Length: 129
Image 1 (cartoon, rainbow, N blue to C red):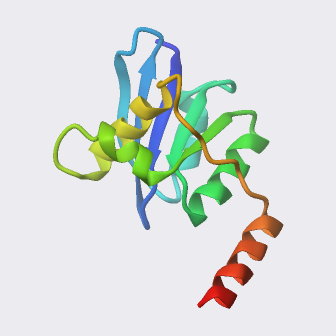
Image 2 (spheres, one colour):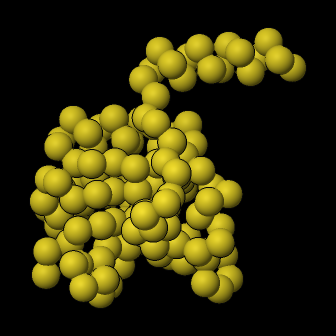
Image 3 (tube, rainbow, N blue to C red):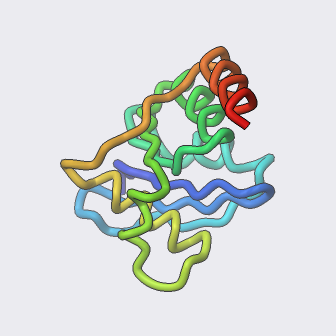
């Protein structure tokens, strides 16, 4: 039951995770609080597992934290995840869709930005307004 891929839907206080094994069988589906999700993730999966999230400001922070711990992190633009949502939009379905989108061979991923790159992007956005 080795988890090879995990999709994470980030929210303000509750994160939804969806993990699959080598046979694409769902082996982990859980709702976790912001304070506990990283510890639960670290005890459930091994380094080398791919973790995917929708690209947003908070996702860059979590991606950097996970990379420090040896995980492969992939960020996906929200418009590329949307086609994989199977039914009504909710956190569990979004996490499943992220996990599914990660498995696609032609999926385009967003590079993980450093804190300095995020700061510079924020400055450019402020100037554009």
